Image 1 (cartoon, rainbow, N blue to C red):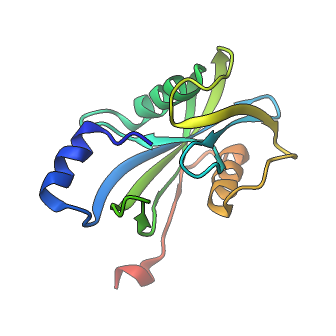
Image 2: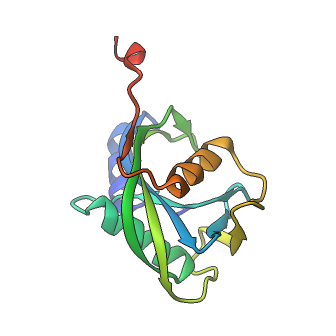
Length: 161
C-alpha cells in the first residue's frame, strides 16, 4: 500500500512509533450489492479505505479513495460511524492508530476495476453473499447498510479512565 508523502515525512522524525491518523472507510452500495477490493498487501477483501490528506475533508477523501482505487464515482450519503481503531502494526513495523470515518456511499457511475496498485481485484458482491473478511469490515458494512439516521459513536468510557 503506498504511504502518503506526509506520513513518510513524519516517519523521518518518529520512526516506527505510533501515529494518530484520520482515515476513511467507504461502503459503496448499488442496490443490494456492495463494492469491495481485494487488497494487494494482504489479499483480504475490504471496503475501500484510505488516509485523509492534511486539510482534506473526510467525505472528500472517501470519494477520492473510491475513484482512485476502483474508477467508480460515488455520492456520499451519510457519515455512519466514527471510531478509533486499536493499534495497527503494518508489515514494515510502522505503528498507527486510525480515527476512522465510515461513510455510506451511493454508486453514481463508472465500471469498477483495479485502478491502482492498492488492490488486485475489485468486485461487486451481493450483501447476502460477502466473501470471507475480517469481522471489523463486516461490522462496518452492516453499519452503513443499516442506514441509521444518526451517526454511530463509540461511548466506551472505561478506556478513558
